[in-house]
Image (tube, rainbow, N blue to C red):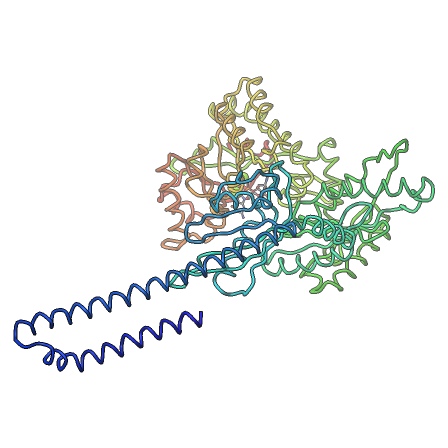
Length: 634
Ligand code: C2E
Ligand code: MG
Ligand code: MG
């Protein structure tokens, strides 16, 4: 390189020297050489051509030199690159060579072999190779290469899974470096390797599994559980939804171990783990801390009652006998429940709380759950007692229906009423549906209770259609649980009406806004069958949920019942008045009738009547009363 430059410099120097001499002395020389003016002009021309020729020769020489120089650099580069690639291939790595401007990738023979492909079987476009990256790893892999290309990191290394020809996955380590850029500085070419690291990944995973999972049940162990618990606390902090921690200890597990042996004991633990997992969602964590102790975290529960349902489900599922080989084993558990952030703000105290609550459950006689907070425990016990009493209420004939008139506001006539259930408890007296319906819903008893209400109301409407008004209609409250697959009420109810020769129109079903919001096919189909049978549908407590007018159209609703909270403070010009008027106008536009709930004063009645409300229901007309008293009203 130095030599070439020196020669070039010498030539340029000689050119400049001769050129200067020529410029200074050519005129004097010419005047001496020629005798007349014509000859002088001719020689002057040769002088010009001499210059052009000399300059052209110099330029030719320089260009040739540069090209030769370039070629020899490129040749030595290619040679060293080839050597480099061979060296890498020799080490067992596959080589890739990516042109970032054309997005074409050269992939070496070894690269293809790594994944079971023949040479050049994978096309040369970048996309072809990208398609082989595992979907879970792709975004990270792309981000890593971009970080390198943007200059944020000085090295490019990435680990991801690649699809082999036989459908299996290989973990690979991809390394590379930028080898050239375009004139304006954009990345042009990158060369790198793929190294198979599947074995290393496998042993890493194995080491992680041993350190974080219980080898008998394959559930997370204490280490991983604490990590998950910390995550759950952070999540709860973010979402503002409570997090539940449960401690679960199997009752008398030691007896199983001692009498049937440790193998059966281990087998039982595995089966218990499976049942526990079946009671929670995928996002919740079930772990085994050791021995017969399990822990559970439940996240994103909308209310604390959700935890109780899970605890009940666990106790119910564990109560089924375990078939372990030739042996049948019965086991139960004691569960302690605590909440974040209600009961504690850190992991240690939560652990202590749950442990304490679990011992309280043991003290209470095992096979039950116990809350850490006394007030919650008391409320849970009341609910449990009520649930037990509810179970016998139906057979013991403790329910009855009260009726409240629904008055046509324009005429004052009554040919509709709402059936409202009452529970005559042998010890606690009359219990309001607001207190026991939620428990009946949680335990699924609402399905039988709802069925009873429907049949009772149908019997009553058949009678009042004869004695009072041929088109008399009774509204029956229904709860969302009745529309789930568990409920499946439609066929039975339509049949029942038909057997009694009653038209569908004699019953209106009251549903909640929430039911429409979450309506799956089971709900939609049942509502459609009721409609086909001529039964009508009313939205109860309208305005308290989140349904929109679009839902009312979609589901073919007949009535909206404006919730009593809007009626309570009804005054001329009040915001509630504006809201009621708007609901009435829009409902009428959609072809629906409006019922105002909780009408207590003459003023409310007259405001609603003026606004065009179709029906009113409330203490102004009558409180809900037993059937016999209702007949007096009529
Ligand atoms: P709901 O369907 O909105 O029933 C209206 C409630 O408002 C009734 O309470 C009724 O007594 C009360 N009410 C009526 N007029 C007035 C008034 O002028 N002022 C005031 N302050 N209240 C009035 P009840 O009977 O205690 O029922 C409460 C809720 O229990 C019902 O609300 C309904 O959602 C549910 N429910 C009642 N019976 C059944 C049933 O058979 N099945 C189901 N699933 N739920 C029922
Ligand atoms: Mg109702
Ligand atoms: Mg209501």
